[in-house]
Length: 640
Image (cartoon, rainbow, N blue to C red; front, side):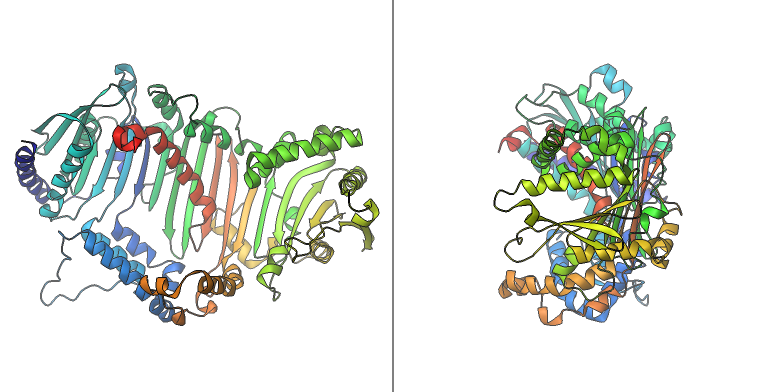
């Protein structure tokens, strides 16, 4: 019965969608103009054509356009293209008209080829949205989820062929109580009703309109999206003041927007997880300090050679979590002086005075999890007892709130292992005399903790440039690498490095005039990210990093990956391009966090999509998906 009913629905749907798609010649409005005002979250991936056009201008595309790189990647990307074509057998690539030459890509490379293949079948955009409006809350309705997917315009068969497959999936995985087809604004609307695991009746809907396949867990949301595309939606997300403050323009390639207050209301309307199961969304909010936030907006845009991202977090009252630790003042020029002019890697933080110890605990937790923070807490407690001092109160008063980490590898010929140890940390100081006293006491206590050697053999001193360098003689790491953690108080800074030579190099950099702050790559990157420093920054010279890691990475690949596996995925190591072929197109990346009266904004510019700007939205979307999973996955599948 369902099979015959489904066939009738699909036929009716194909006819109406053909009329609808043929009549629609206008471009689709911005997503924020399509979604209703009660949208509490949405994520968007721009159309493939936009990605292809703008990606062709990036430095990454210039790398892919290099003959050596193209030759090396031809095998792997041909495999990807074949997989895409096999996965979409119903669609055929468009043929050029007779006498009309095909338009070449601005930069001929494998990535653009894949994007062009995708554009033939699913041109996009792809949008996921969650609505929980005041009306939903008043009526006791659960949050509504919608998915929009651009389908090939002018190809009603390709769009309509998706419907039977979707209906098959729904009928196989869910207990459907009723199914009907209706007309809404000259669109065929398929409505499916079922009862969710929590007892709520769900009236899901699907349609194709204006070149978009629309799926919604509530038919009213599906209708609102149709109204938004027609320009007849009364209250749009773009009219919302919270959304307006995020700074999203709608032309970005990736967008993620979360209305935190709305998400909390939606969580209150949903069943809580059992006590023995973690609440992933709540944990994420607390750790990141979003529990008192109004909204979060993240975007990624390809602008010329760069990938540029913007993360905006707006709060009510005082900022909490990791974000609440940042001071309102930027990292100073003096703080940057420890970073050499050619530093391949640097990061800095200016922390609020009353949050300095909390910052170190969070840093320990980020590196080693809860165990790392517990270890630090025990060490501070023991040292406070042994020294008869209150380190919790004294450390912020003695030391400053500016912390800078820098690589000292620079342009020297350094092996990958040597470059890994070429780091120094600089901490500002408020009282040099007390800092020297406290540093000596703490190092003595650490030296005494080694039961196998006398303290005077573990802790040693050497004079250099009029100051004392304290260093610990430790055992070799893994029996190979010999580290000697070294410390000194120099020019109102506590300097620390992994050995004495590296500490001396940091001291020489600090007293010189050529630092990262006045280097051309850094100043250019800062100008591109707004022109002003903030209380947190990270800087990566990708050209240097690539050249340093190239030999180590290729050797590891040859050892770890079997030759048969490499051949299977189309990789021929004999065609591997020279390191300079790639690194010549790379330039330094800079991320800067800036505080505002209502929140914090992080701006990033990089030749590659950097992990520090991809991690926050991925974590947020993952946490939200984990919370709304009961509405997206059938209960029986979830158990399996």
